[in-house]
Image (tube, rainbow, N blue to C red; front, side):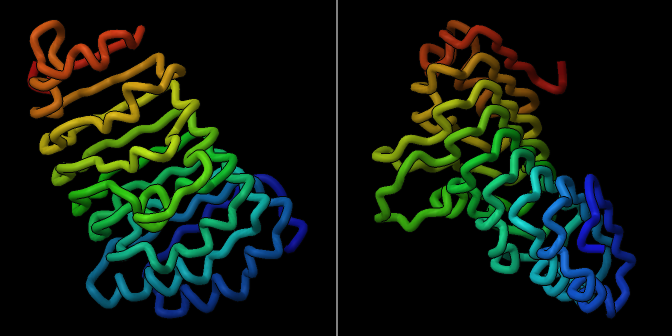
Length: 235
């Protein structure tokens, strides 16, 4: 089984032995596995504890290039500590982590090009924890190869904080923010990214006013971006 190649999809049904079964699978030995999709089963508080153990046990090989984790019910990202070792990860999709209050530390992943975060409804702030650094740390470029970033259905997200002394997402070319009605502003580092060609803001009540064409007080900071879409979902 260690010679498994290509893609692997795992769906958990909420069984108490799920974590031990995934440990036996030894994903860390499957160096030829390029894509992993993990689908959790929604459940009660006991099931959420089980999800923590499963996430700890996943630990795929660092050669993995694409990872999707769906409907995970963990409350923190501590059990996802191993993600920092995925040096070849190019695409990451986190869907409907409705109990998680903070994003995982992803800024130091050297190969990450596409990041999609959808349905993390408890997140209120995206800050240094997302960058993967300590507050006082001065680091190399963060998200050095990220080209496409999407945030969707994060209804309680209010603040996107950043560290001004560090270069963040220098190669970002596409940014999409959808259904994040409480987000107050975009971080200033985005205004300076020369590669940014597409910005899409949909159904984000506050952002729509702040960045409204010609009249929004922050419009001048994004008006240079070639492909701009700022639209209310109610239109």
